Image (cartoon, rainbow, N blue to C red; front, side, top):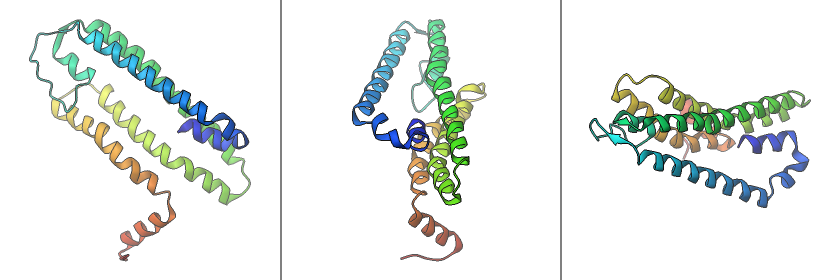
Length: 192
């Protein structure tokens, strides 16, 4: 999404050439292949782990953070894989997103028309909101030390369910009819 916004705002005349159907399919195939190989790497490394504590995972889903709490051997390779994964799949995409949005904002600020600046900002605002929520909750979930299983579950619920649920709501707020209806409901007017 950040790259799409970057191309649409910074290189609008080349949009259809850069983000052609062929290039989008190649991007999707690349993402799916990398995701599959990443999952395969985790699965093969987890097979070497042995459980020395309870084999119950107090979580809604089995992620690596929850899994390593139940094991006592074989976690070294998983921790190395996790470190590399954080660098490649979290830090690098986040930095690319931040750099693209800084570039977008500099281009938007150079636009003369106030109305066109507002439109350009509004196309980016929903994606920035979703990214902030997604990275914010995942950062809290994975970076803060585990104090209790209840907090881990609460952050995991926000990270895995709340963000995808509010995602369509955030993107639908770009529609002016929905904005008008929402403001009417907030102000106490009823729409039929």
